[in-house]
Length: 257
Image 1 (spheres, helix red, strand yellow):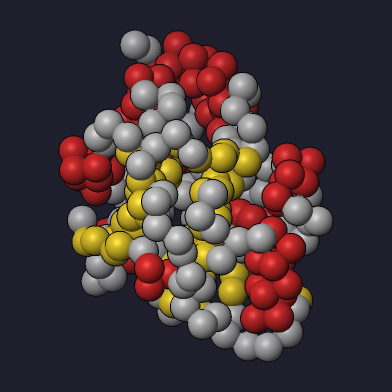
Image 2 (cartoon, helix red, strand yellow):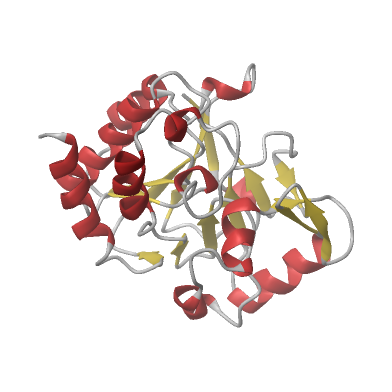
C-alpha cells in the first residue's frame, strides 16, 4: 500500500474513534510508552504481546529522535488497519507538530510541506486517552482540568487543556499549576489528586517526561518509555489485567522489552 492510501485509510478509522477510548472487551491491556523511531522496540512489543483478548495501547511519540520514524509510524498505522479493535494509538506532542511546533523535529522537518499536511491531518485525529473499568487511565503527558472523563471528548486540539495532555509534566511538589516551562505545563501533587478523584481513577499511566521518577504520588502515577532514544533507561511496557482491581501502579505488571 502506498503512503497516501495508508494515511487516508488510517484517517477513516481515527475519525470514527472517540477521543477517550474505553477498553472493556479484553482480558488485559498492554501500555507502550514513547517509541520515538525505535522500530525494533515496536516490533518486539507486537511479536510478544499482540494476542487474542489483549489490547495494545501506544501512548504517543512515534516519530523523531530515533532513526526509523517513518518506518515506525507506518508500521503502526498498517497494524491499526489490520487490528483496529486491538491496537490503539494515542496522540503525543510529537504527533502534533503542525499544531504546536517544536524543535528538533527531524521527522517533520524532513517532509515536504504537502507531506507534512498529509501526516498532520491524520495524526490530528488520534485519541487523547484510554480508560479501563478497574481504575486505570492512560495518556501521554498530564491530566486536563475537566469535570469528568466524558468531558475529555470536548477538548479541542491546540487548547490549553489539550496542551496539558500532550505536553504536561508532573512535579513531585505540592500545589496545582507550577508554571509553564518551555511550553510544558508543570503540575503538582494536589492537582493530580483532585483530577484523579474527579475522574474516579486510581492509577495514571503516561510517558513523555524522560527525567521523571518512574513512580510518583504514592505510586499512583507511572511513567514508562519503550524507546532507545533516552539512553540507558530500560524499554518498558505496563500490563494491566482487567480482572484485577488497581490500588496503585505497583499492582500493574512491568516488563522490559
